[in-house]
Length: 492
Image 1 (cartoon, rainbow, N blue to C red):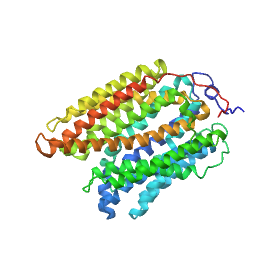
Image 2 (tube, helix red, strand yellow; image 1 turned 180 degrees about the horizontal axis):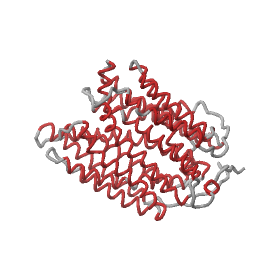
Image 3 (cartoon, one colour; image 1 turned 120 degrees about the horizontal axis):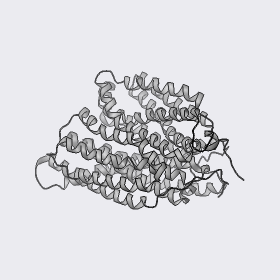
Image 4 (cartoon, rainbow, N blue to C red; image 1 turned 60 degrees about the vertical axis):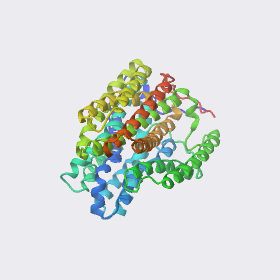
């Protein structure tokens, strides 16, 4: 039995090197939609203290506005590959962005904390599907010779949106009440929904795969428990009560057990082609290496994202807005270089980009591993930009190489796995970073007060992350360009 798409890249483009204008516009709508929903993942970080005061809740309760959003994404993303297979592209886009628009409107109108929390969950449902849907659409309708450039555009979403989220939030809150965090996003998301419903193409024929009701709770508990436990490390480190081992170990242990059962279940279901998350993508060595090197890079990226603000504010004494402005050039560097890196990928392949990029990221982390309580802010800015220059080559390369290495039949599952790795790797990087920071600070005996101890912890964390990048370099040597296949037989 052979499954074919109603549109292959060459057919969709009218030739092997061209992309139809309607397809380019559709991808543009998906890019803008993804940018808006990813922005919402970090836009709350600066706003939570304001919301705590206005809605009369304590800090631990207020933190759930971020936790609920992240947890919802961790639960829904692994299912997105199945949904892409089962629903038409336009229908799934309508559900995803429609949920996000509904959640955003509810958040803007929320009279109480409970309503706002429900709104964040609804937002998270939509946000979880958009990025895998975007990746799958690009890999389906974009000619192979231009996929790197398109994946470079996706890296703008992944890199710039989280980087500018706190800055945008700070600017809005400096002039307007907190509901405008959502009122400013709502018209952009609503316009994207209206335009997308007209322009997003339907790719292929939906497969009426039965839903496995055992896999869904196993996935939710597995990925949700793992991310919740890892996220609890970061929240504990920033709270007065410190890190609670029970709050971390119990959900992680439950999550790991559920995840093992989920993976065993998927291996059994894929024999009849009914898996919720098909693991046959890992039969490709290039895909596996791309996912692994991407996961390590995500750990470094998100670890840096949590460590730098702590160091800049608690050691160097910068304000939240100053911190946001200082880290902004690094995020913009990653995003603006994405399309350039993508075009270089199309010409030279992944290895000439991945290995030097990870090496440069390692150098950036080693330089950040030299900071002290007397370091200057401009030095940290330069080190951060060097790190960002290195990481800018990684994301477009691993996405394109990894997804190109699997049969088109499994692209949606590969996209879901990359998005899941982004969430889990980010949570692991955050947990790892704050743990190393605490260990380094508690073990400091050199004097100089709390600032010197925090700086020592920061150095330890960055140096360990540099070691993580060295491992990523070793894994990345297995990543290479693999010519994409056309429609392929469905095998077991």
